[in-house]
Image 1 (tube, one colour):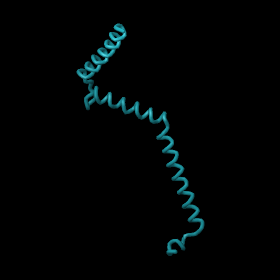
Image 2: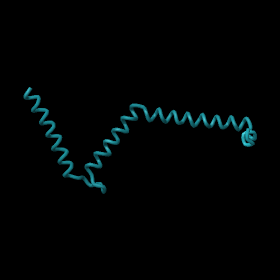
Image 3: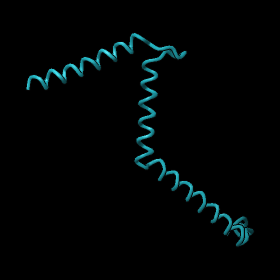
Image 4: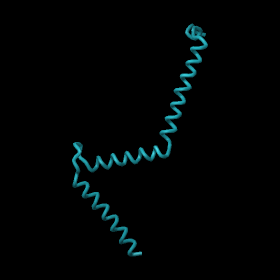
Length: 89
């Protein structure tokens, strides 16, 4: 045994073990939280919302009307296509 190992008391070793267990428990709790389906969904919705804001706003926060108009036109076209397909079935 090295001198540093021999100089540690039983109480110091037990305190280190308790601290290590607490760190591990915290890590396990964090992993459970991060992998919970509701948390994954929340992060995905937040990321989608951020991408939408980035796509429709300038860096200084102004609305990009040209992009919003293009998105609206695409949405109308998709709805129209769906209605047309149902009507022709």
